[in-house]
Image (cartoon, rainbow, N blue to C red; front, side, top):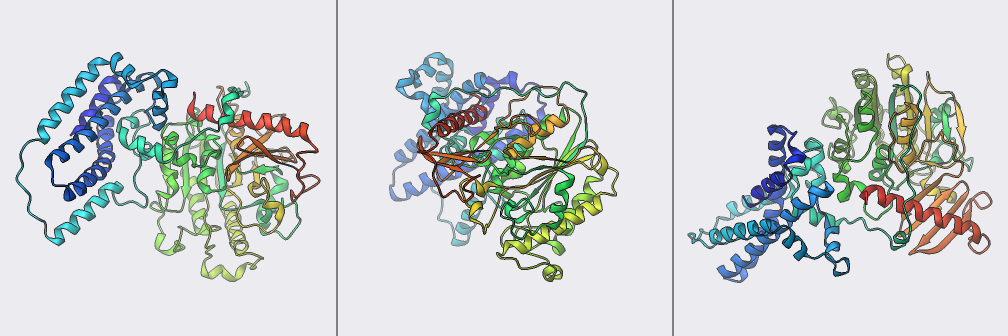
Length: 586
């Protein structure tokens, strides 16, 4: 009841922000918010209950409940007032503003908004009187009842029967974009942002943002369909783009290279699948310890290929044959404008085609995707994320002997996924939508590697990136450095998007031949620019490699190329600063 009242206060204080929502949308937000409220209630009340089993004191029970309720009330009211100005809910970063060095104290908020302070006092006083009421002592539950209660509490604390516990970011999956913030529970959101912070390095404090809105062509708008194919674990080493000239395992993908706009120097923006989705669809790289999807910032809508193309009349869909809650993809993409999500729940033949581990085998799933695309309203932007080339590299029994073993376990499953991709194109080329479709084929990240060149700071990020437009694009080779975050602006460039957009990537068709890609892993920030690779740790230069002369990155050139190191250092810090500027919009 307390959290219901606090949510109602939040809506009333910010009524102008939600006035355009009809009653049903706000009702849904309150209902979903109750699920988040119950998580906080279960944890805090359970903790207080356990404590009172050791210390028999109703006064202690009352004081603890009073502290919890007062804290929740104060923080939620401040949250409601804060939202009026910045249009976002307060996160753990808020407490940094209470630092005396910032000249902002809690008293400032109380003195400026004293009517709310009075309201909190009245609310907590009433709550305290209610708690102090006498109750009859409950009887000790039977052990069966106790087990049932514990099971129910666990289910509630997880937010229901789910693969992963419910979290604030899931509001975007279930609620309208402009009402989902109503469902937030301030206490839970603060805990989440404390557990999964996105902290900026100290060196960006002296760096000004250099990013500007990108303006695309003024030519007439083009509306081809787009299909973005994300191949699980397809490192560049396995393909015909491999610099080491070792045996490749992707004959079909190799056949597309001379027919496509082929990026020979393409990089993933992270090392995990969960990093690829924000990079590809929202042009947001992974530059912190916390994956962006798991950070508090993922709860706010970002510019994405789905919501931007929707303004041009595009429908949108995303296919991933894994559990519908896998890695938080659905919540993130729905928050950012995706219209239809197809997971294992939507697949009609799960019993027959499930690999027993991750989800649906690539061959039947890609055939399913091809059929579903034929039912999509054109123009459409769609994506499919494969999974058979993920450990444990399952292959259907009837095809196990169709592929060579390779040198490492992933090689056989790479061949299977490449074959599934070939069959997808064989099926799709006869469909009416095919000739007006641009296919963007890339990987989420690399996986196991044999060659040392693909284990270096930049080499482990190397992936294929092909743009295949059988009826629309002339084949060409692009040798400059590009990355997953360039896919969104490239699509906007291809459609001649009419408005300027703030994105971290840039179209691969621009004339910038010194494009720089930034990465972060193991507390090291590093950039790749053409054949140069430069990294810093805690603002100290760590390495500089010239991959043109030293493909295995064994010779550190920091002392010999200090001028080049300084240039890359400046660019690295600017890129990191731009990243934090975009995600926080500070």
